[in-house]
Image: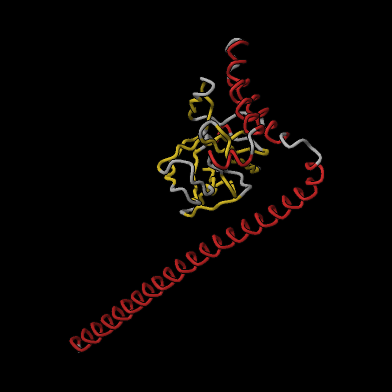
Length: 264
């Protein structure tokens, strides 16, 4: 009788143990499935979020470009009434203000000497004949400037952004059979709304025996044909302020292209 009861007790214990093991295994499997489902859901939401950001930025740029185009169209009648060299003289004036800010600690005479080459450079561009310039110098066409913002591991380009990590400058060097084939040294000037160059380097100007401030320097291999170029320029975030920026592309002491972009 006692042996029979012990056998039943063992059988009941084994049954309870098996049920416990089965229940634990089932719960572990369920948790594993739920965890995998949650990870897949988070991954999908992250992908959708990035796609939404890309779409929003593209629409924002599209609207901005449309507004800029309308503004330029409205301003065209006024620009046509100005003298032909007004625009380039304005560029020279912005460079002149840049040199004044840069050289405040120096004497008035030194500041004056530093300003001359920049102004003379822009005015010489305005006074040069168009056909003569096209035969002797490179020309940057279709200049496009974008601020680059890094989100996750993706690089997004936009005209307006709260945080710009780099500035992308794209353009096309036009066809020119006179310019020697080979590496061409290109300098980039980024001028902020206070007319100050975000200077990281200097450009020696042999014609006027001085140094011009520049933001970056690049080498482009030119083969006497239209060449597409894109340069990514690092900038000091501490020097970035809100407003309209001007970008000048310089080759052989001449401004060969210019463009504007906004930082908000």
